[in-house]
Image (cartoon, rainbow, N blue to C red; front, side, top):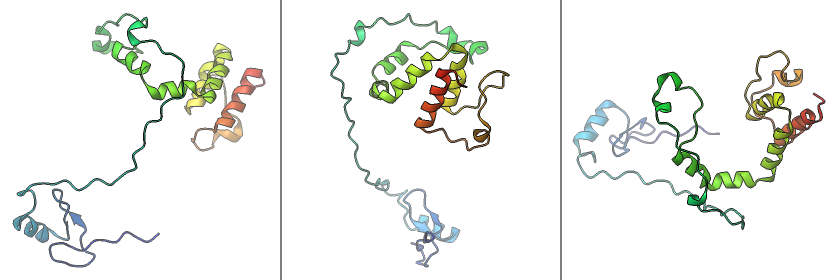
Length: 188
């Protein structure tokens, strides 16, 4: 790959010298002297500022979720009681897990991304396998799925020696499914 070319200075017209760019109107210049001359000769900060045009990106239309099942209206759902606002103000409880507030629950309920994720067969299979695990194996399996390090307890899951020093990249879905099948069958 060829190195990026340096543009010419727009003030003194020196080739391959425009190392710097005016923060206001994005004119390339090569030195402090050129910058001062540019400001004195009418930088657009004194004139009307027009931001540089944004690059044209392809517009991606949101694809509707292919789900013909009827949905309930939000006001018909049985919402839990609003949690006590003092939970978020107490500095001693700032790191504790807190219940979702009404607006957070509404955001979850109306999210098309979450609906699509929950409708995904691969996600449903993963959830089914996780719920089939014994309670003691769920947290280590979740940590494995999320790419978190295993817990440092004695009898919990330990990665195989071949995986112990591998990259921290998450496993592929086929590797995760195989790992979950082994755990469900009790072979590991």
